[in-house]
Picture: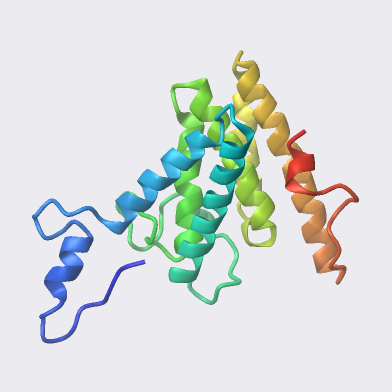
Length: 205
């Protein structure tokens, strides 16, 4: 999701370096901005106010669509999730930034949210679990390849004594089942939603 590739003449190279934080002037990179937004939005999904939670989920989904459009996966926007990319092991290496690797912006964003699963606070673990559930609900076919690795990571949180975390894990499992059924129906050429009561609001109950 770089702002520009730079010209052969070198005139725009410094602008790119500043945007990515490589110009030495302390500029904030696009990846850092996205990560900061994701962290705040994830935390807001646990606010007590119902409208605030709804707005946070909506903005998280909008951000995911935005980075996906700006940085589609290699091989086309309909590409599946590659495990190496998901774990930050793409060709760009490093810290696995939002735009690194071949998975594209959406997959880098999901990786950022996944980091919250190992947070030291139950509140952040719970918030990250539900944020992942919302992204899985929205992008079920695209994230289907990640589910076999993501589900065990989420289920490990059942070891905690926090009722908040356990409730979020159970909510994630409910969404995962819905998403798997939805993908299966799509593969069979059926376009209707999986189940008769599969709205996001219903799945949160």
